[in-house]
Amino acid sequence: MTHRPALGIDPVANHRILQNLLDTRPPGKLELPPGRHVLADGLRVPGGWTLAGWTLTGASATGTGSGAPAAGTGRGVPATGTWLVAQGRTGHPVLHVLGSDVSISDLGLRPAPSDPGEHGGDRGTGLTIGEYLYRSEPEWIQGVDVRRVHVDHGDLRTANGIGVMGAVRDVALHDVTVTGGYTGLAVHWGATGADVASITGPTFHPNRLTVSGLRVRNAVEGFYLSSVHDVRVTGARLHDVEMGFRLLPGDNTDRFVSSPSSSSDVGARIAISDVCVRWSGPLYAVRLAGWGRSEVDGLVSVLTYRDVTVRDCHLIGIGTGDAWSPVTIERATGVELSGIHVATTPSDDCCPLA
Image (cartoon, rainbow, N blue to C red; front, side):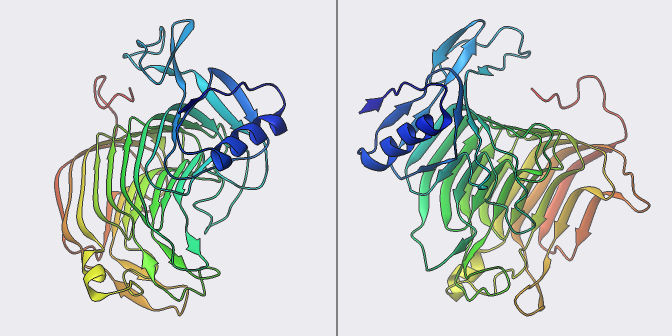
């Protein structure tokens, strides 16, 4: 069943209409009309739903991304015609996917200003799939497809754009754009526990994730992958960032996974390719690290990467700190690098954003 709700100027009414529909109707397709729709708070998205907006075609709009490129957007990139703007200062994502088999396409998401802090990577985002901390062992979220979504934080630099957290697998993100914010795409392990210092396990590590055509600009960082496996990132364009991307083991690497077989997967089969970074920051364009210090007990452990490649990347820029490097490698055994090109200034046709 397809739902086409009428939305107005009242943020409370808009939120109530949409959340009630998602909570009480059988899963179907929710088509959101073109325009800028203000919500009193973010929306929880249960499993089975398809959410679709519109793309602009010149001065008109075409539903579910099927329109021709918008006039004036440059390089044939469609302009987003449907925006959801959150007002609530709760830190809830504009869209929080909490179930499997969800599709989201052709939407702009504007989070409310928030400062979720160091361990709030799943908060204050435009879109979060999964969660960081769980009260009890969760069911895995799987089969999520995200296409042509634009998260716009404006001048805010304290919250991430998109979070893929915890017990999440079989996720695809294609042609996603993030403007502003801290990290454009944060992919992070999750765990059972009340807070990061009292994790008891098990831990949950995102896997079978495909990211293509990610575009991040004017953020602190393009993306990071923390304690994951079976991930492929290709064709990312990360411009005007302080850091391009990081490959991380997580604070606890694989110490709390549920079984030895699960542990052997963490840090395996990760491929990052065809990434352009235009950066100017104090430290590095790329960090590849294999060690992590647990906030549970302070133990330092090292993750051995297996079948991990970083190749065909352009790193353009210069550091602003006293000690900087385009690539920083910290005990990251098992990572193969090839085709890493470093320059201080770009050529005219090198790695356009669009």
